[in-house]
Image (cartoon, rainbow, N blue to C red):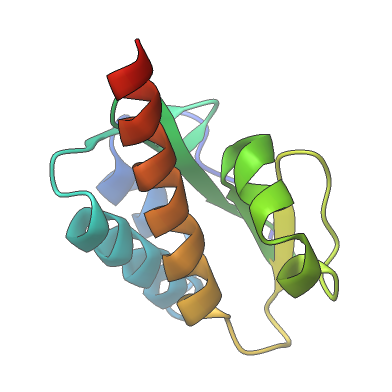
Length: 124
């Protein structure tokens, strides 16, 4: 399964393109973001689900062997120690399908990004 989503106009269309076990992960992430940031705008951005609230909040995507999670560079830096066991880069982390999804960590990163965006809004 290559990264899909090209041509998807909505997050629901994006998720529907994947096998049921991947859809379950993506739907869990979608629900989590919507619970944490209910006012966030949901859209397809860079060919994947993206969430915006006073700026970019978080993105995620399904790939062949992992879920790509993109909480911007600050989200990666803030959780650097906890993300050390996963392949990561400046603004992204890969959560392999063969390991349990670290939903609690993902939740805390999303909460951090929301607080950060709200703080940046106050400074503006």
